[in-house]
Image (cartoon, rainbow, N blue to C red; front, side, top):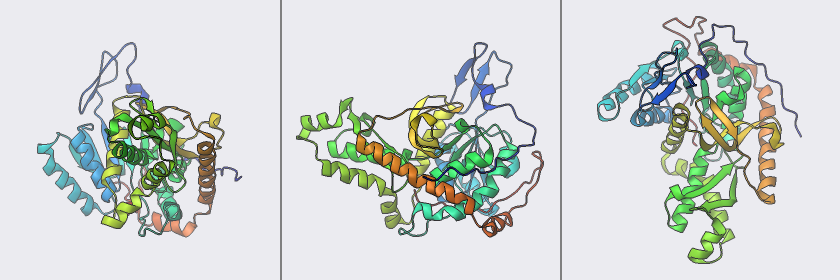
Length: 395
């Protein structure tokens, strides 16, 4: 088994902002959350305006900004992209939609705008240009971009929550954690949240019920080795096997395997049909943002650093996770049968191999990414670095 590599933590020599936890309610403060404002009444802290930055305005970044505007969750949405004209076009287009949705301030930003963001969403990454190319095969190019971008983001806002959507998301979530120096609770990957949605939709369609009444999780890698936890799946609180017997007879293992496969390959199926995926992952990202900003303690299958008690080693992969205002509150160890447990360990082994390859990112690739940046050191400068951003990989 590969030993976890030791990646350098960024030394954040900067004036620290008030940590996000400082804005949480306590005995001296009552918490009131509206659609676009968090108020702390009776505390010393001022009213807090939710502010979310999105790095990368490809299909996923732009669609996420639109979904976030429609949600009314964030009073300020900052878009950052190497191609400022492209980002400016998205900003103007989104402002045109404001009258018909929610009042939010859409900002054409640069790195200086990270200073007071609650959440920074990373959608920048290497494009998966072919259905025959695995997400993990894009790792080196995406890692080179992250190696230059993450320190620039975290140096300006060491109190933010990082939400990673770039693929391969589990490996890049691990890299973001190592390269940012952030605590584990404030580095989150979108993980298998979308895969879980796909599985629940397929089960709901098969059994002719609403997706809201289906509870089933996909864990492990957001990719080929993901594990559908069908042994613990329920519909309306009834175990899946029992629900199937009541409705249509004994459960068909072949049918369940086909649904799990369809959920796993759903992104590539969409890629073949329309050339990209964007709506589903954007909705998943906004759901994660909502759980954080509203302090929901919602359980979502996001990627994060695996607790030691799981015995899987040092890596990031998806497990049912409780999200609140601080980010990751806790990780729920799922109930698995022996086959699922072995499959999860196999998924972890694959991801650790990919994490080990992070140390072999060619210096020339990092240098090429750096060449696209104009790095500044002060947080209050009006123009900061632009980074090498590409269109988003399919989800």
